[in-house]
Amino acid sequence: MTLYIDPPIWPGHGRMWSHLVSDESYEELHAFAARIGVPERAFERDHYDLPAHRYGDAVRAGAVAVGSKELVRRLTEAGLRRRKGREA
Image 1: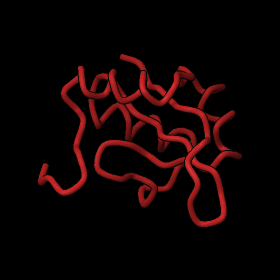
Image 2: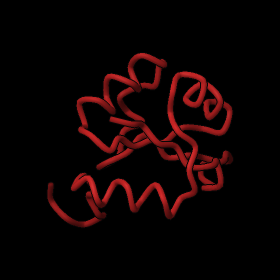
Image 3: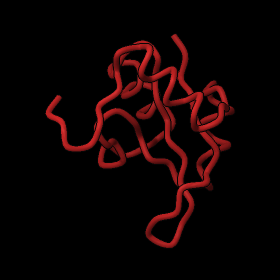
Image 4: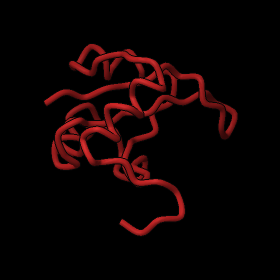
């Protein structure tokens, strides 16, 4: 039961973004996001998009910092990966 966050290296809307995922369940992910004040609208398929200025908040709250490839690997191994264009 761990939450993971990758570095804020993803550009969009004039900002840099991180992805926050769970290796346990979407329920765990949603609860963690709510606890640190991430709005529900930041959820996309299987992760939350967090702007760079929120990265430290997630880590301080217990999210484990990993590289992007490691984050996707853990999400996939947990059976929680939802790819674009596929119904979940």
